[in-house]
Image (cartoon, rainbow, N blue to C red; front, side, top):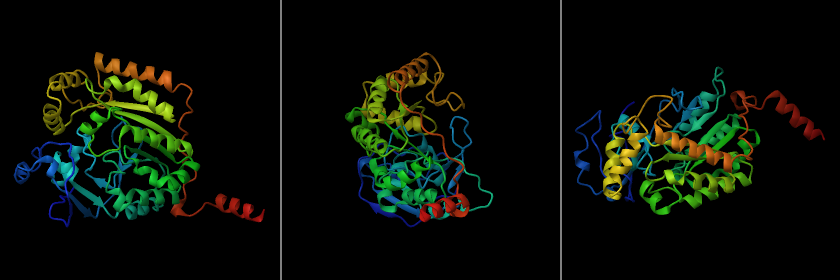
Length: 365
């Protein structure tokens, strides 16, 4: 993947940030000394419009249920301190720290690439995860509207999609989402990490408040959009006590399904998270790090497929049992998310013969 340095960028005034520093890039360990004296919350936002070569990515991990993912943005303004995607920013020549949340790459040709891919005679429809790496509804989506344009193309082709976000901006696209849902082409998961606003502001400085996310679930369900809650990541010693309250609140808001992951500090994330933890929660830092390690065989990260997302050991088992108890208590009578419709795919984006016949019959009546 090529570096984004040197490309034309747009610069904006800084906002509250998650990371407290820029750790060295493992691929370019001398490239970021100029950034180190800068106070984290003074770091300005830079936007890099780029032309991507591809937009649909094959998911290789057996831990994830979908085949493809699609990310219109690289880097994420939300600044979530625990985000596993921070490490991917190093492939662009940036740091996983402050750079990840202040230097955002915008794949301006994403809609064109998606349409070209779906129009291929050999394309076979499978649900695409939007986004899976960084949030497709992060703040700059208001300006560039790439997610909305991608959804318009998916609806045009009657192609299934799964969305995961923690931003209320998704409500802007209710019109398209309803169209997708009418054809059983859509699942939405809203991430809720904590219900405590003071914790949310520390963990996820530029995301929607928890009550706002619950309202998003209510709004989506009120118009028939299949919606679940993602309790992620669960951070032992900090948010694990909120598993049942989050499940209860989400179920009351209308969520039909729920899933979870346990935090894992892969790559540069261990350094970034620990620095943040010792600054923001110094009295709890050692305990939280120790509990995280308990869930990953004594390490802060476990990359082994099959166990990396839910962890192992007695504490991970307790979290799993607590979550399952919450599902039984709050989601037992919920209707399941509908199966994706793979049969209505429009080859080349054109209505099928069956659709044209149905439309002609309706017009005749």
